Image (cartoon, rainbow, N blue to C red):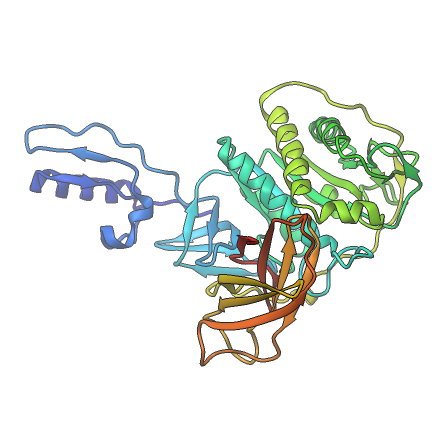
Length: 432
């Protein structure tokens, strides 16, 4: 990573200018900063200076940052910097120079939502719920909780786009994370059980990874056990190493990174009872709260957590590599936005009028559907949209004949992008 040879000269020039004009100055790090209007995200302090006073020492943020958010929020690790440009590793693993976006100076934890993109869906439940979707939902909530607790956290993906395993691991190592946790939901089905079938896979040569895994197991088992459902569970479930026949860690998310890592299988999406639970809004909150608590305990205590059980020997299938990765658009929003929803009931069924916007609309990429989800997690309707709406932004479409039970008091309408799937701004309304 190149050193900023001009940093000291830059600071002296800036200091001299501030002293000369005897004004309140904003201190910006890094060469290439042209004016305050283009570098406001780098402001760290405001110092009053007069021509007869030596200003106090000002601490500048470390430059370059460890990570970078693209204009649409996609996070990436930084590898180098040159002036006001940073070089990042894109989700597909390619180097790219960027100027637009936001710097991130510290990352303690990386959360990896397993799978993603049109090819790598992960397991698919009998209810139609793909693993990649619930993995992302839980991961986003974990990231939100940790960041609110003052633990800087980055996700390897924030939408439904592919990220090869090596890129995910590289992100954790480049940003200097203290922990990497990969979120998954298992398949195929296992024997029926009265308790959750949580499995945690850890690095065979890392006591830190094993302690992280033990804490994750303790907290997730306790939290998920509050749900009264018919679980699936493997007889040897627990915290374990999984080695391939050559004796190496079998899963790339624990084999490749140097960062202490753990792969979490929160349950069995192949079990219909569990898949129905995963669709309920409270599931992601409970599961994410347990994962976040375990990570915080790992970072702030010496608690050991659950001990290892006997490991497995297994050779998993190959994941999606760079040759199959579809590059994510870093400039445009990933998803359409739902602007408003109006609902009316007629003769025992509901009709919704939904207004959406997708400013990137083109025949190659547009908002191609919206769906109606009850507060019980059930999808009560999907309206497919078969063409772009480039000449009518925003646009309004209706969906009718929805049979929504009286027990459902709120519904959420969410849009789907032709390329990146479900996501974006949704609207929740109370049913009149």
